[in-house]
Length: 201
Image (cartoon, rainbow, N blue to C red; front, side, top):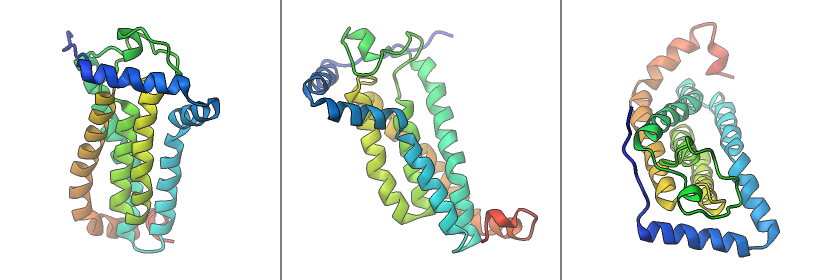
């Protein structure tokens, strides 16, 4: 299948180059910190999901169901993003612009648009918001930081992460809204089944 081939505009490319140059000039400790978050920061969202579920089980089965759904909604957004990548065929900026980046440049077949990290982080944040407003409020800045870190380490153009944030947010919201409308009914069924421990303490 021949995909569309996207490229960055001059403004986006220049912004990317400015950020990469800033990263090279930044203190080593800051680069290490941002790189570590870029690599392992998604664990933060997994921890928030576990916390949301643990708390929700003590509140109501419906809330516990929404908390249980957060990784599923996040996975759905990831699948959508992964389907878009090979269709849109945007090369990584480190390859198109031939720059040295903090993160090793991915393989040529590892497309750039949209950013999977940004998609996952945004979807997790939105899904968490439906499960727990408090934890969702923590996840939102964490998602923005994850997206920004992907440009800092040189893995993505700014428009890649912007698209990832949009895809993740929209897909998670479109799946969470209808689920929330039926959460009470679905949770009640689980509460009466052998799986009761999933939705009640």
